Image 1: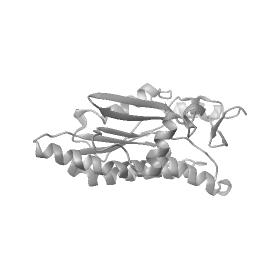
Image 2: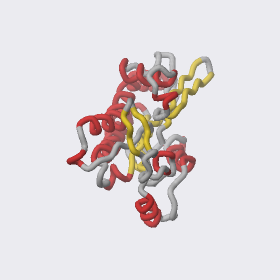
Image 3: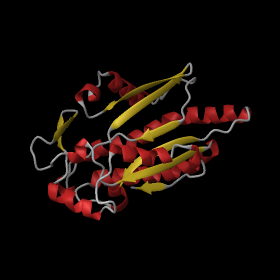
Image 4: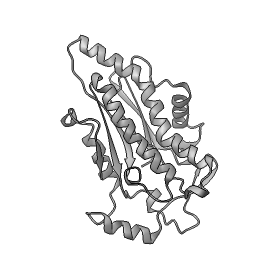
Length: 239
């Protein structure tokens, strides 16, 4: 998935900003969501001190594939920036707030568990030809989750990762053999979709015999965000 959500809780209300970062109305830096994401990444500031952070899901992403000898620095840097550097900057910006909330709650005898879920991929766990940038980044967020589980355990934060295989989204549902299967990322026309033969082959390797839906993918993330997972941390769920 490529949706990014910014949640702000204030005066007992939750403000939710959500959108697809790959669509023109939100990927544009002048859009409301675009401005918030741009501010977050450039300032290093997540939210004001009076804001409560409970769950962070590092989920935004896309692919820009090529074999290593044909991949230029621009492709490499763009995918690493989106899938690995952005989650790093978000968690770094969140740390002072996470620590402050933990200390305030500890002083008042309150125990709350907070959650971080990084989205990885089977490409990151097993590799995938033509995706050295994406596979490297997705392997990186697994290492990030395992490391942050050890760093933030003292703050009662569970940090885990979900590694998805074939999920039926508009990025995978498109036919890669068609010329119109393109997305625009900062002026770069990037081919999306899965070759029909590869798609059929992948389905035979999936135990359930079909790709997952976005709703089913969300369910895997949800399991890491509920109280029943309060003693689960540093793990990766493959689905």
